[in-house]
Each structure stands twice: as C-alpha cells, then as structure tokens.
Image 1 (cartoon, one colour):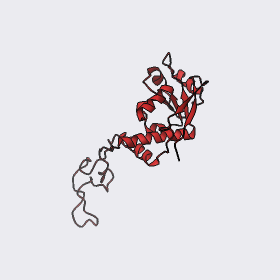
Image 2 (cartoon, helix red, strand yellow; image 1 turned 180 degrees about the vertical axis):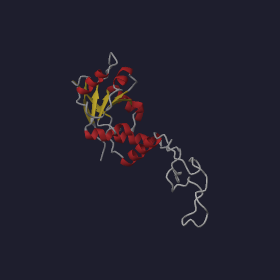
Image 3 (cartoon, rainbow, N blue to C red; image 1 turned 120 degrees about the horizontal axis):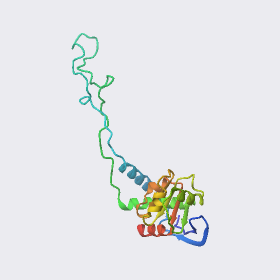
Image 4 (cartoon, rainbow, N blue to C red; image 1 turned 30 degrees about the vertical axis):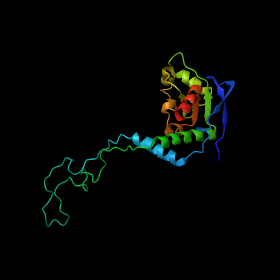
Length: 213
C-alpha cells in the first residue's frame, strides 16, 4: 500500500465552505498505519499518567492486639500468634499493592510514528475537518458550543488542534465534557484515538507538518 494524497476543503468557524482546499501531508496522513507502535505509545501514555500511590497494609502495619489468641497446643486448630494475620477479618493483606512508578521510556521515533499512524487512521475514516484560523472576542462556553454546532459535533468527542495557545478558545471549551483543544506540538496518540472527530486549524496543520518533518 503506497502513501496517497488527501485533499480536504477548508471551512470557516461557522461551518461554511470557504472554497479553498488544503492538501494533507502524505508523509503524515497518508502513511500505512502501524498498529503495534500505536499499542506501545498508548500503553506508555497511560502508564506514565498513573499516580502509583496505591497502598495496602501488611501484617506488620495493621493495628490489633498482639495478645496470643489461644494456647500453642491442644486447641484443635492451627497455631495463631495474634489477629494481624491475613486470614482474619481486619488482618493485614499478603503481597498487597505498594507505591510504585509505572512509567517507562519509549523511543522518540516510535512515538512519532504512532502519532502519525493515529492521524492516518482519522484521515482514512474521513474524520478530519480543516477550519480556517479563528479566535473568539470573549471567553464564553456558548461560543464554543455554537462553533461545534456548525459542524454537528456537539454529541461526539472532538478535538480542535491549534498551532499556538489561544486563551479564549481553550478556556471556552474547558467546561464541555466531550470537547477539548490541543496544541499541535502536544498532541499525542491517545488524544487522537480517543476522539471521534478531529478539527484542525490551518496553522495547526502547519504545526503538525513542522513537528513531524
């Protein structure tokens, strides 16, 4: 399977076709997706995001009386020293979880290929929409809700990819559970795969090209 050129129309923030078209970089959106590196990168992202603060008390940490429960012999059962053993209700846990670091390293080229593969999948599925650069005059959630409604994306998980941090756009989308805004340099594989629709600004598209090429 060879890489192919994908041409998409450019829309304004009101969802109207501007009459212009943009050619997606075939070295990013036209590659053959690599499922294995996608798996590795998603695993890396989720593992690195784990706090690892889980903890269970062991036999030496639970608080019970250390008085011997019964005599050593003749009781008809097993010998027990105190109630801290794991077989008793309220006793310590055997081999319980302890704080640990789940993070691991992944090569930069592997992470880049994984992100490009996820973008290629979105291109194949036709889930990418290119919008011309815009901003909001005021910081209001209804501005972003109105923006998404023009593309019929209010009910799906969407990501808007920008090239630079735009305070009004990012904060306007913050209260929407299914919507998020990412900067091209920080977009990762999990973000792309976890979204149903991908909106990319023209400068955001340039930012992705500069990042990967």
